[in-house]
Image (cartoon, rainbow, N blue to C red; front, side, top):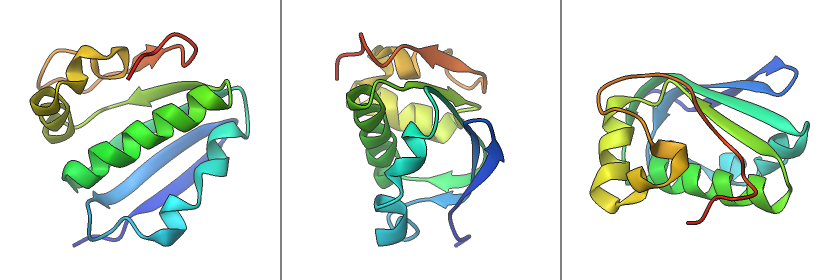
Length: 117
């Protein structure tokens, strides 16, 4: 198990590093949503995520809802295949935040103002 960290890169850019799992998502991570409204445009790079599970997907969905509520554009980069497959199993791959080709890591940009979950 690799500890989960959210690393600020400046100007609304963040990197998620480590395991994005039930075991690593703690109270500190759950209370750290304020980073999503530090600017009107936030990019979260998931390229350093080692492993993930349904808790990781749930956290991403909460980030989407929080960003939409605070009128922040949220962009996910480098969504791991494992996380995309979880989104696909639950039907969230149909939402614009997860609309990518399976198995490819790339930017997924969508407006939080029109997204329906």
